[in-house]
Length: 415
Image (cartoon, rainbow, N blue to C red; front, side, top):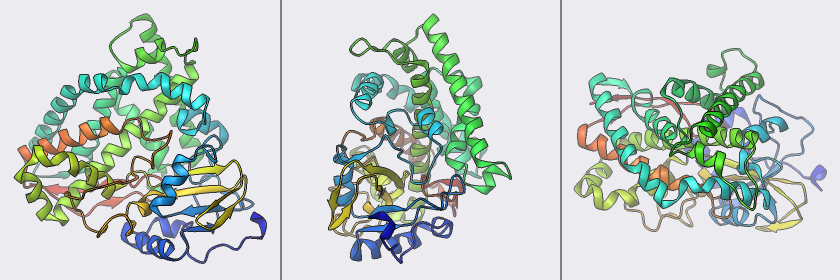
C-alpha cells in the first residue's frame, strides 16, 4: 500500500527542480522514461498547501502512458482535483469548471459550453483575431526597436480574443488579465511580493467571479452574439448553467485562454532566434506550412506542463500496481520529448510529421476545447510578425518558476 512504498531517488517534487531550466528537467525526465516510466514520489513543494502527511503521487512520463491515463477516465478521475499540488477544495469548484469534473456532470457542462467552439463560431471570430494580430504587431513596431516581447506582443492577443468571445468590456481587460495571471503565479515570490499566496488566489477568484456575474446579468437583460449570452441561454435536457457554474467556466477560460497561447507565442518566437533555419524554411511557403508548424510550436512550448488524476479503482500501469485513491500526475513536457515517439525531440522542427504531441492533452473527454481557437491565434500572430518584422530576434527569457504553466515572464526583443 501507499504507506510502505519507497520514494524514487530521482527528484521531480522540489522547488529546486521546478526552478531549474527546461533542458535540466528534461535530463531527469529522460532518465525516468528509460528506467522507471511510472515512479512514486513525494508530493511537490508548492508553497501553497503543502501537506506533510500526503503519501505522494505516481509520475507518468512516457507518451503512451500519458495517452492511456488521459483516455481511461473511467479509471483515472478528475473530480478529486487536477492540479499537481494540493489546492483548497473551495478553489477547485470556483476555478476549474468541467476541467475538474467527471461524467455525467462533465458531459453536461462541456456540452453546454462547447457551442461557443463550433467551426461556425470559430470562423466568425477568425477575421477579428486576424485584425487584432495586425494591430498588435503594428503597435509593437511603433514601440520598438527594443521592447519586451511578452508585454508588447504575446500577452495581448489572448485577452482580446477572450474579450470578443465573452463580451468583456475593454475597461475590464487589464483586470481580467491581472487576476488570471495571479491564479497561475501564486507560487511565484516575485509576483506575490510578500503576500499570502492563498489570499492572492482567493482575492483574484473573487474579482473574476464578480466580473462574470455582472457580465451574465447584463447579457440576460441585453443578449448579444457572444459566448456569455450563449452561457446564460444554453439548455441541455432542461438544465441551465447556474451563476456559479458560469463564473467557474469564466475563470477557467480566462486562465486557459490567456496563458496557453501567450506562452506558446513567446516560446516559439524564442525558438526562431535559436533555430534561424526554421524561420527561413517557414517563410519559403508560410501559408502552406504554418498549419503543421503550429503543431510544433505547441509541442515545443508545452505551455501546460502537468495535470493530475486520481485512481478510482486499482489499475496496473506500465508494470506498476496503482491503488484506488492514488494520485497520478501526467508530465506533458516529458511526453512531448519522448524519443520513442519523436525523432530528435530536442530539435525545433517545423516539418515534423506526424506530430502526435500531448500539449492539448492526450485525448479522451478532457481534450482541450479551445485548441482550434489557439491554432487560429498562433497562425494570425506569426503571419503578422513575419509580414511586418521578419527579422525580429528574441533574447534570453525570464521564466516563472512552477510546475503548472511553462511561463515566460519577460523576454527582450529587437528588430
